[in-house]
Every structure is written in C-alpha cells, then in structure tokens.
Length: 601
Image (cartoon, rainbow, N blue to C red; front, side, top):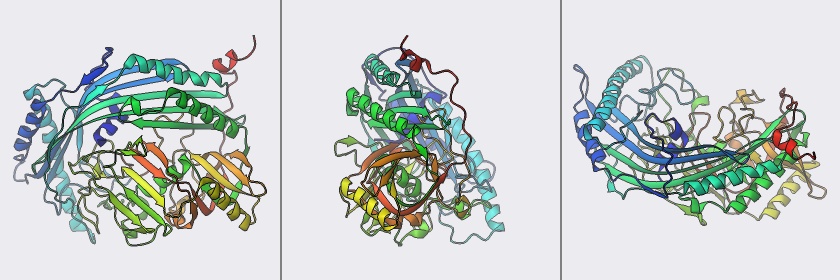
C-alpha cells in the first residue's frame, strides 16, 4: 500500500486538476507515462542550476507526482447523495538550499501552533496540479513554475534562519537532512477494477439500513476506491514509480439524547480492492450493533465522577494508543523558532529513548511492509515512503523500553537516518509518521480473564463498579473524516489541561461493570482528565487479541498520515472521569421523516 494514494483519499475531491466523468468502467488503467517521468527528470536537472543573484544553488531537489483515478460514492437513508469520478495528477516539489547540516527546513520563525510555521519554514514542499495529458512541454512548464517559486522561498527562508541562529543560543541542534542510497524501481502501471453501478446499489442498500431506526438523526455511508502511480525523482538519482490500489468504506451514525446531547460513532473498513471488504450482510449487522450501542448510551444516565480502574476494549484501545503514543513514536525534530520549543509542542518521545514507557511485557513495532494481518488488509501498508526509501519494520519498544523511533530523512538529536517512515500527510514536506503500529503484551489474556481483572481491581479499590470503554470520540482539535456532522467537535477546556497531559477523546460507548455480578450498564456525558504518558506504565492487564483500527490521520500537532493501529484491550489501574459541563441544543421540534414514517397512520 502506498501512502501517496492514502493521502489522495483525503483530498481527492478538492484537487485543482480534476476531470469528472459519468462513464461506468469495470476496469481502468493509468497511463504507463514515460513522458511524465522524462519531463520530471529533465526539469529536475535544470532545477539544480537555479540561482538568484549571488545566493546558493540547491543542494537537493525532489519531485513527486501522484497520478490518480478515484471514485467516491456517498449515500444517506437509502439514497445516493454523490457519485464522483476523478482523475488527477498532484505534484509535490521540494527544494533544499544550504547543506544537510543546515538548510531552509525545520524553521518555524516564531510560528508556534501544532507543527509550526508555514510552507518554506517547517514545511517547504509545494503541492500543485500537473496537466493530465502526456504533453511533455506542458508538464515541464508546470514543474518549472513550482520549482522556481519554491527555490525563491527556500533561499529567503535560509537567510532568515541563519540570522535567527546568530542571535540565539540553540543547543544540540541536529542536522536538517540525512543521506540515503538512491533507488531505481519502476513498477507496472496501476489498474483499477471497479463496478460503479453495483457499488452504488450497495451504498444505497447499506445506507437504507438506518431507515429502520427512528432514533438515528444523521447517518452516512461513504465509499472511496482509487488506483494510483506514485512517481519520485530526486537529485541523488532516485527514479521510482510504485502502483497501488485501495478502497475505504466509512459508515457513521448519530443519535441525540432527550437532554440534547449528541452521540456519534463510525465503522471503517479498508482493503486493496472491494473484495477485501466484509459482505454486505455483515456490514448491515454491524450497523444494527452500532445503532443499538448508541441508542442504549443515549438513554443512559450521566456519570458525574469516577476515579478507578478503566478497561479500554475494542476500538477504544486502539484510539487510546493513537492519542497517547503514535505521534510520539515518530522522530520529529524540535523546530527552530522562538515560540515553538516548549514542552507542549514536542510530540516526539526522543527524550524517553532508553527508558521504560510501558509494562515490561509490552512490545511495540511498526511495519509498513506488511500488507495483511490475519487475512485483513492494512491501511498503513506501502512499499516505499514519500522520500523513496523502502519501508522497514522498526522495533520501537522492547520489554517496555523505548529503543527506536520511526524516522524520515530528517534527523533528531539522538537518531539519524531513515527507516522508511517519511510520509506526506497533507502537503508540505515528508515527516516521520507511524504506518501500521502493532502493540502486543506477551502476557495477554483472554477477554473473560481481562474482565475479571477489571472487576478485581475495582473490588480492591472499594468501588461498586469498574468502567469499560468501547469507543472514544476524536480527541480535541480535530475530527476524523466521516464523523457525525452535528457532533460536538470537542474544543472544551478540561480539568488538568494546564498540566500538559494528552487529549484523550471522551467515551462514546461505555459501561459500568458491577463488582457484585459482572453485569454492565451504559453511561454517558463524561470526559477524561489529562492523561500523561506515564499512565501507560499503570496498565495492569491486557488482552491477547488485537483490534484492527484504520484511521485517516490527523491530530493535535499537525497529525500524521493514514494508517492502522493494532492494539489489544487494556486495563488501567486508575483513571479519572468527570461530568462534561456543557449546554446542549434541544432535540428537534418535529420528528425526522424516517421516524414519522414508522408510526401507524
């Protein structure tokens, strides 16, 4: 699986150069474009000679093109709301001026924020559209314009960065870039096999399942199917084309409690082709379960306050590790800049290398080279990253100790050299990101034993019940694609935020697990206090079966690329939950049409 195509899923409908078509094709083949590659290579050679007055020429230039075909079909309550076919060529240009020791990148210039600066500072890549026709001169013209603009900004940024460094004491600054071996790999062109009419009917059928439920106020089904050729050429000699295909299906639902609180959740399915998706009957069953969970939660009481053991099960466990660990396991340098070097901005766990961050039975690794796990396709799979480096498995945590980080070509203070994790999340330059993150406890136990561990911990704490969480809302500051449109976006201040804890999404589907007999009762309306990384060491038990969770990137600090997290359920010794103090919109005055249609005439 190639990360460029994943990136295309998120922005495919907003591209500048898109050809729309209503034609239905069972098979489409992307052009085997020797013209595109030749234009890229020829303009690359010219770009290395860029020079403005007596300023420096580039020491490194990279061009990348994602040549894509995609279909996007969306439906609501049994009707197709959109069915689009798009064809695009997206061009990413990187021009580095200076040297690997010091260049125009990794400079926020006081920008602050979640990743800092702007293009030409923290992110110097330029994303634009190329002609769809194999017109050699037209393609070179578009590349020339982008490279020229990027060079001008690069030399200006490097001048400002050098001036900044002269006026500041910056200790232990890592180099800005690292060398890798050039790669020559020209794969076959991508082919998309997709029956549009058939899947429009499937989306209609799946979305119509929500018509059964008068409680559902909002719902949606979105299918994206794509094929792409990803081209990378750079001044070090890399010449690469990698084909890929991918499908992503997202189902969302939203209900509203009588007090106005909105609750939404989703299910995401991924594969290389539509044959990797579950059967339609299974998806319909999943929808029934999803609505049942949300309906029970909407009818549940508010949890005022809780302090005790918490079990994260199913999707919630993977979401938890995404919030607490995934960004930190990506090696990203602390950016140079007057307002961006505080602890709150540091996502990387570089300063924790060599220390224990999880129970000693835990192992964590990231392996983008693995296409499937136990028969399931992994969204984080790719052959080469966005810097043309082959994907590698990286053993990150061994026996609870953090030993390595996922690395791009951008060094950090303690580590240098790429291990194939340089990925472009949403434009800009490649940065280190996790891809397929595996979390495993060597002492993992079966599900029934894990529930027993939760009950025993609650009993030892003198509590009437423990808490089990099955799904979380998106963390504050971002919303995953496909989440309910009317849902709160979670920008509330919380207790403990000032202490620098991480933002863990509030429970959506959660239960009290009673010590007396193990029965479970749903609750709602609460949020976690600030959860620090050190809380991971307070995991007292874990399951033996991972939940496979596909995500499309995003995050509080600029986020990462799309990928997969495979995590077992876990039980924490103690976490705090408190009531959400928030005013809600009143429920609609009239019932929804779908609800009214179920009433007797």
